[in-house]
Image 1 (cartoon, rainbow, N blue to C red):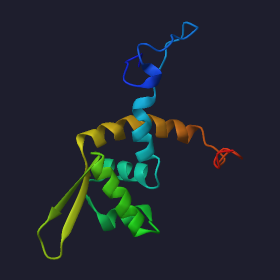
Image 2 (tube, helix red, strand yellow; image 1 turned 90 degrees about the horizontal axis):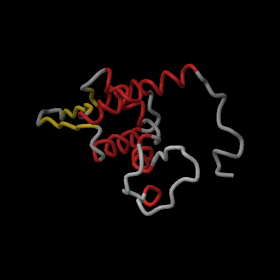
Image 3 (cartoon, one colour; image 1 turned 180 degrees about the vertical axis):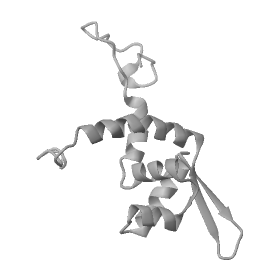
Length: 134
């Protein structure tokens, strides 16, 4: 990415970098990172990318969720951001299925290389002082 003028750090009237390096603007990913960094979000995207459509109970069992309310909240957020589609059927008992939208599929495909890299470069846990913001 180059300067686009869509945010303060990339504004066309901003001072040009001192060196010849291309300026990459990461501002467009802020909202996305906020969404996918939450508990269960990446796992939901990955599971739906492999096994869709899925019902709530199937997602819950696959993730071994300890808090169904947190899973509900995360699914609702992913629906609101347009990454997951929720389809409710007028049946008895009620049936709801979740699947990735086209944006969700594209994101899942682009996350695969990151997950492969992470598997090849394991970390030993949080860095002291970083997780708590110090």
